[in-house]
Length: 183
View 1: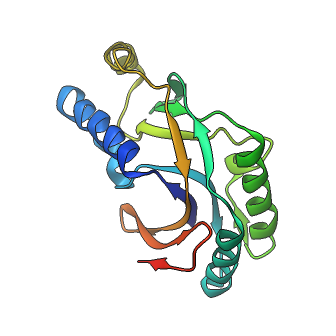
View 2 (view 1 turned 120 degrees about the vertical axis):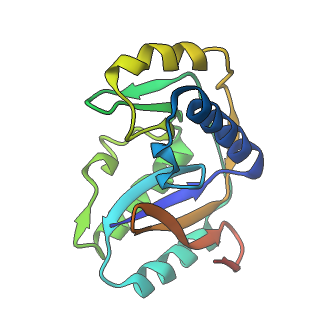
């Protein structure tokens, strides 16, 4: 299973790394590091022909102008290991890109991640996942309440993250409006 994501710009990546560093130091939370890049996941899929996918993402990236997204507050996906995240507000430009990617990549995929269906997708930036417990939610959220999460982020890439052992690592990055590959 691969993830199609947009990596955050340097400023917001540093903010996320600072926050996850605080959560590691104060609460021992390291699960979010399974993906060592601050990112917004657009979808997950099982794609048999990676070259076809890369060609497609290259074409979409050339046609896509940068998109500004906004974040606000904090969110929690409940469960045995709750996920703490920063919600990304859905706007027409990000919805259109996401719907296009989902529709067209589903045609070349043998499986699509259920929660990335356009009707279910909740765009977010994860701060803690995998090693959290319901009991630590109160203290973690109390700690995070001291920070401002009203951010404006410019999305300028599509990036394939590939599962490698325990981690999701960057396979290839496609910059919007430019033909350049960053491996």
